[in-house]
Length: 199
Image (tube, rainbow, N blue to C red):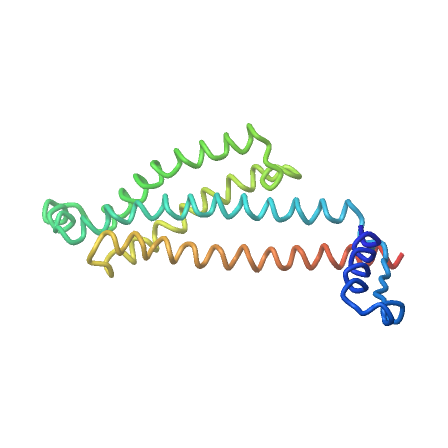
């Protein structure tokens, strides 16, 4: 391909020059073989696909957990929370019951996600027996996201703004984490490839 392009470019160059100067000008090309290996490219492409899969899962969970804040903001601003406290429900009991109810609802998509990951054997999540760690990570994401969602629910007055704000905060933190982890992973892969070539 490079030799063909070189011949074509020389033809175009010489056809645009006057006949007496055609032999004076020429385009030369040199071609060097690609130093990488196909395996290196496969590792990089596989890593990029894994990152895209993780971003898709992340987006889904960010939107899904943000949907729980709608109920909290509504309850806070309609006064139904105050009504429950007047009825005799203590503040800690209210939040504990809310947390366990939200976690029970949250576990349904977690179980379905883990079942899909296991069924399709996605390498990003199942390689080196990572499925248990991924399951634990998804469960702990719920444990961490609901308490601070309860804290943020008092700030928002509008349920739509609470939903959008919570999705944006989740995505910002999570995407930055994935990007920084990916950079470290790819730098490690490049460093590993350089060491193999030196040997």
